[in-house]
Image (cartoon, rainbow, N blue to C red; front, side, top):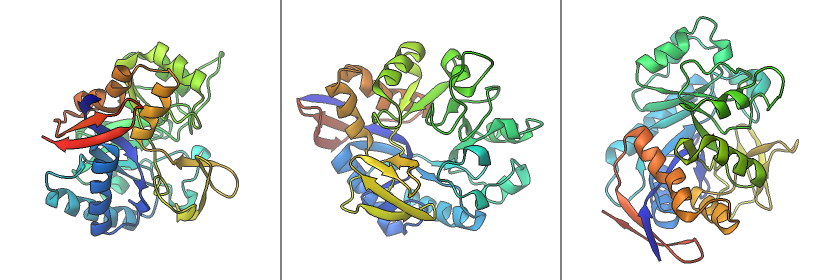
Length: 310
């Protein structure tokens, strides 16, 4: 049995049937406890989708309420990851286009809150750079995502590398190439072998190095749920094997949590256990300046056996 620090989920939309865009405070509290005890999650960033400004503000208040009341024996809310509405409509994925907003500081101020720690946005739409500068000046980490841009000036990280962005090209520039060749940029990677193939996971690890990779789940509420279908982002999402798709077949998010991803890539020999733990815990602790609140004990088959709070 091996002991590690707790997992940090930086990009997660829900789990156990709980949708962070529509949940009550009680549902969020229950989800946080299950994330800790069943999946070894120490800290997490509830990730809010593109929606009306009113709905984003409403859920922000619920998340703040829960964060203020959290006790020791639960996964702690580190902050909100705002994935939209300031994205490129041409790379919207399952985000509802009718709610996408221009990169306007005055619009952002309508939902601005100190609990928002990460904003995924499309920098190519920030024509004078003022939107990104405003975020950074207010302590928000800026993530390029749902974007066709390639200029990483002012960017801290990449949202789910390879997904919902300009693809790799051997001519010209793209966000993928820029991310792989910039040693200062962190990259989120969904290593579920669905969003990104195993060979591309290996290439990314070789190019970026362990210290700049943040493994994420991008889990939807159907993850670790008995349901096979639910409404998410205003549309039906279906669970097919380990894949989540909408009716057009577009991949939505992941049915895995990070504890499942640890098992996936260690069982396949893509990463050694001690290295994958860096990518699900230690890198995030350093990046976000978070403390360690729990210990996770792993069985020999790379599944979680027990968690204990410090």
